[in-house]
Image 1 (cartoon, one colour):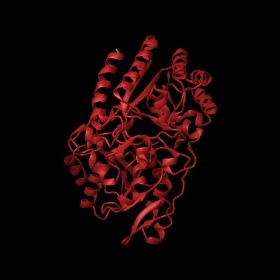
Image 2 (cartoon, one colour; image 1 turned 120 degrees about the horizontal axis):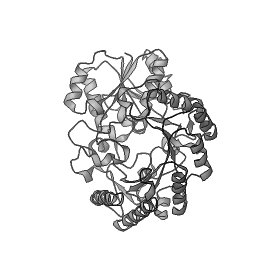
Image 3 (cartoon, helix red, strand yellow; image 1 turned 135 degrees about the horizontal axis):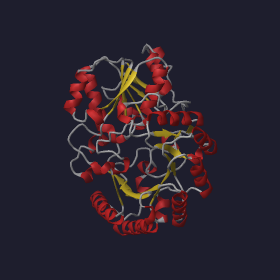
Image 4 (cartoon, helix red, strand yellow; image 1 turned 45 degrees about the vertical axis):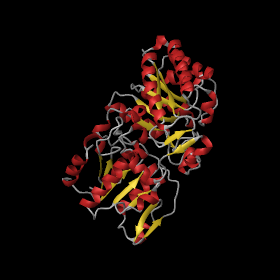
Length: 452
């Protein structure tokens, strides 16, 4: 085995705040692993090396179970790979790498992911971390590392690598990496066969104030586009092994969607296809999607707020509710389904404005009541963190926020709190953390009433 990857739960202790994960179809352990782990495994296998993934959040969620597994690894790898993509996993990651180094001090630990890239200096200073690969595309640098002899000369040639050179920390040159076959599903992990997703591109041109996945936050100047050839290849591969729905992540208007839809039609894909858009979709594109899908289709949108001022302050595009309602009507009328996502914790959110949000949601449910099985609204909380790298993170006061965790070790410890309010890393001028929790519970009750 050349490398064994790990996806950790948020924590390995008994603290479990399931409310934090309501928006991601996961428990409070956040067991869903990043899609990119499959990409890495497949890429490495294509180059005749061996790799596998252990999803600790699914099977090794307690520290005792983790320790038992680590002590009895059947085939020790040359490297351990640890994913720190979403920051919510930071406590679990630090616990894991400490155990790995205690048990196997001579096996190097390499960490990657968006959050690892942001906090790479703090991570590399840990005695338990040997290498960090920065950036959103780690495939090529990781392959070079696996094939290297780990000598100083060989390590210096690997872009985006951060490593320890005796008593000093070496940061190699940073390059924007592009890869033609990211998000490959030739490697299918048993725990992931119920959920399918394909990334249309990496990065984001939108500029939501709380998000760390924008081009600006990631330090890239363009979208890293997945090819239509590869997207279709992955759709076909999934459809051969599963009847589950397939979601295309990223607004399809940022790729050549005309060509992709025609090819999906020609391939006669029978799976339900889910398309993501960041602002209302024109009727002619909805019709084009419908005419090229051989089964059900769904279009998701996240306006975040029904109050235009709040939506604009949050960095969303400035469109009216009438335009949003028209899009919903078009999707449902043409035969699709549409979930709509709203969020608590935005600028100017108070109990009064939350009531207005709920009034609009009730209006939507009444208007589209005949489409009960195809229309649904989700109203979740910006949780548990405002993303590092986001506009709020760098200038919280400008947007009316106060951060309770900002440095690396504050994030490591925050999710171990037993008080739910203390797991949130922010409050606003309008709501403190306890009020956010109270409104979260209020929204949950009201949404149950509205959605009946």
